[in-house]
Image (tube, rainbow, N blue to C red; front, side, top):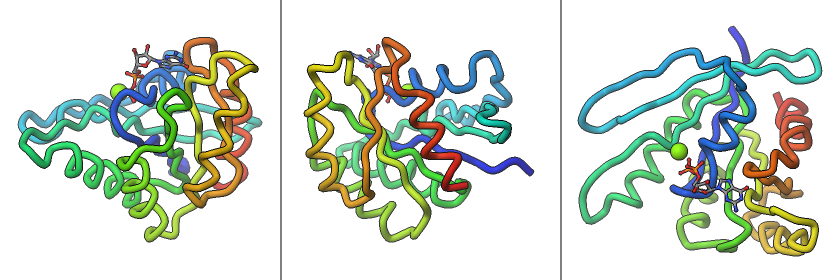
Length: 163
Ligand code: GDP
Ligand code: MG
């Protein structure tokens, strides 16, 4: 089977945007479980001759007061279960949030390889925004802009290296 890269992170950081950039038109499966899971989306990609599957875990939505925290836990657990490498996506505009720290703890305990992808670095003036993400504890963050299609190759270089 192909190795699996999962994209994890809180809502609105740009997971689906980056997922679509990676897969192009290679959407493989859309799993639809009404109730807990909305859309769990799988695609395929290839980089430097390495074929892989990629999961956008962000379609998962859980209602309730504790929804956000549960959402984050479920996403992280799914990724940990299935992934060979986890892309932990965060948002340069908002900086490190409490939810990001929650995700970081869960991913750290898993022992799986993690690449931190800092999205919404839309221009070079914003490169300084990535440094605070070293605090998540997963080494060098990769700067991205899903909107502008910047940094996708750098992300895939880093992720494929860890497969
Ligand atoms: P998800 O909830 O993590 O899957 O995030 P989405 O991919 O749905 O994106 C959330 C919002 O961020 C959307 O309005 C996107 O257009 C926007 N967005 C995604 N990537 C970028 C980016 O690189 N720069 C900026 N400025 N906005 C982005
Ligand atoms: Mg999404």
